[in-house]
Structure formats: C-alpha cells, structure tokens
Length: 513
Image (cartoon, rainbow, N blue to C red; front, side, top):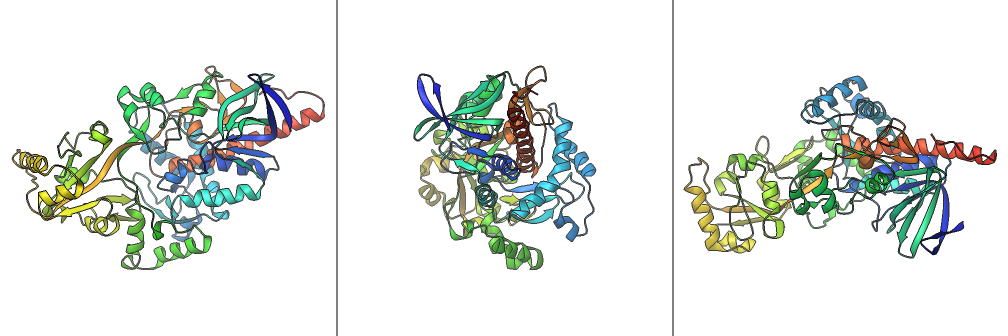
C-alpha cells in the first residue's frame, strides 16, 4: 500500500493485479476468473450491494451442448446456435459483430457448466423460435441466485469487494490504464491494477442525459429498470478515445410495479432447494407445480399486448384514455401524470384471458399467467368492482371521468366494448427502459479499442459495457454474454498481470499491447 497525490490531496493507493468496475454478473465473473488464476482482484460497486441488472433480470441463459439438453436427448451444436442467433438479429437494422457473436455461442456452454459448478441450478431447456432446438435455461428460483452463488465464490477466492464505491476516473500512466480513482464512504481512494482495469459497469439506461443523446430527446423522461446504470464506464472510456457501437439500440416496455416481498419469492437459492424445485418441475404434473410457478411468474411484470389487441384500454390516474393502445403506448404512458396508467378490462374480456393463447404475462418456457392468477397472486395491482364507480374508488380515479371515458370508448366504431361487469384494473403500469445495447468497441481479447481499432492499453470491458457491436437478440443471450464476456475479460487481464509481473521482475516496463 502506497500514497498518491490527487488534486492536492494525499490518497492511499491499494495495489492489485486486477481491478473490476461493476458488481453485477459480468463483473463478478471477471473477478472470479482472474482470482482463480491466482491474481489479486478488487471489485468495485457503486451500489450498496452487489447485483446490477443481472439481479433484476428474468434470469434465462440460452446455450447449446448442456447437460440439460442431453438428459432430454437433444443433440445440438454451436454452429446451429450461431445460425439461429443471426435469425434473431435479422429483425434489427444495425451493424453486428459476428466475431463476438461466435465467441458467445462457442463459450457459453462452458459458462453454463461453470455456473452450475458454483451451485446455480436451472430448469429447461425450453424452446423459443427461431431457435431450431430448445436452448433456453431458466434459473431457479430467480435471478438473485446468480449473485448469491457468485459472490460466495468471489469471497472464497479472496476477491476484495468494495460496495458504495463509485469510480470517478481512470488512471493512465506510462501509456496504459493502471488503475482507478474512487469516491468511497471514507473519501477519495485509488486502486492500482498491475494487469489492467475491466469495465463491467453496465449500460447507460439510468442516465437521462445519455438517453436523450443516444436514443431520443423524448426518452430522457423514461425511467430505467436499473437507475445505477448511468454509463460511467462508457464516459470514462470515451475520455481515452474509445467509441460506442450501436448507441441507439435499447429495450423498453410496459411493466407492472414490483410486487411486495413474500415468502415464495424470497426463498434462498440453496443448491438442495433449487435441485428439488427442478426435479418437481421436470417430474410432476403441471397442476401440482402450477401454484409455485405462478407465484414466480406474476413477478415477471410484463403485460401482454394481446390484452390491447382484444380490447383492453389504458387510462391515466385522472381516469382519461390518452392513446391508441395498439400503437406503441409506452412513450404515451411516460408522459402521463406520475408516469403511470391502468389497464382496464370488463368481465367478458377478462374471462377470455385464461392462459395460452390469451395471457396476461408469460415467463418464457414456464407457463402463461391468466387473470385468475393475477387475482390470486398480485392483489397489490389487481382491482375489481361490480360497477365502474366502485372500480374508480378502488384505484383512486374520478368516477365521473372514468364513466365518461368508458362510454366514449364503447360508442366508438371498435367492435370490442367494455360494457359488462365486473370491471377490472391492472396496474399501475409504467413505461421503463430495461437496458441499452450501445457498448464500447472491443476486440476479440476484450480490450477496449479506439477509432483506429487500436487497443487502449490496460483497459478491458465485458457485459453491457463491452458489447462491442454484438447483436444478441432473443431471451437468454444477454445474460449469456454477461457471464461469458466477464469470464474471458477477467482471464485476459489476469494474463496481462502475469506479463507485467515478469517484466517487473526483469526490471523492465511491460510493453503496451
């Protein structure tokens, strides 16, 4: 440990082989991989706990050549997975990085085994078109399991984990990135990195300025799923000459508010428990497992557009209808008072939403939630009244306005009408941005590169920070990339630390590469 002067202040320098910025899935994967190779590692997370966007995800990983596939007699290949991934991406009008896509599909089977060795359990695989074979594996009991098991492994390996620690800048010395300067609860700090720094700090969905700059001015008001993802890593890398690829790409949509905590969604992800869950899901009837499945499913929080296709409408908290629900209603919801709205159905329409093909929400490959499932499991967002006035009272909107809104809708030329009680409101719903897909340009060694394609020495990236132009549409590819890119980036920077150590022992500075 040494001292260093920064902006007139004397700062203690903590010295490591590897510094990882970000404590989500990709950051934990990078830290674990580097530490497993015998390197000293610091993991810096600006939130008060680890998790990142990974802990807020649905939790699926798509992979070929898994034990789960073999148990079901499914023969698969990475070549077929690569071809099917390109089919997903064909609907997106943006450049893609086939080299990084190939790295993903070739390495995600090993990543899947690596996760299972740490105690993460999965149910599946299940099919999702245009995958030609079932590849989507769903984590049990939920995505918190990733962080639980990875954090345990990281601490066991001696990773120095620092939460509530925000990286304020990259330190560059002798032509290479050699560490970071941070703001901690105890003041300024510096962490040096012999091998380099890995940026796994997420995307920029949490920054209003970045949303306006890269997406559109109107997206500035749209709230993110993860408000901590403010593009810190992107900004620091840009200051050193890096560039962002596909900055306009993002995923946003309507979501129900998060459910209150309850026992079934707070189950600890112990290995014995998740194995029992998997065996039950695989071996017992759907009716036996359905109550448990639905308790998890209705926390997925994404309402199906099929409700609007069948005639449901959106009203704001004043009881007014404000958009054509079948024409991208999300941005209109974001412009309403409080940025909230309610989905309204009548009794006749609600009776049609009993599951596939008419469902309220779905967890891919698990099951489809009906109105009855929400009535039972999401009482916090399910309101019902025999009359419009009673429903208005329950959701806190003006009854006269709501009656007028529904009367006007029913008198329109649409064939669907809301005219038979009981009346149901689901919500509130919000329009949220899940994540952005604009990532720093990287090479196949996960080094951040500049406009000329040259590596910025000592700077690496993984996860959403280091997407590098790889289009990875479809369920399960983003998490697969997070863990896989994190592992590979951690391995590269660990190797760079060994090279630096050898050079130091020989009395020479390591060459930039």
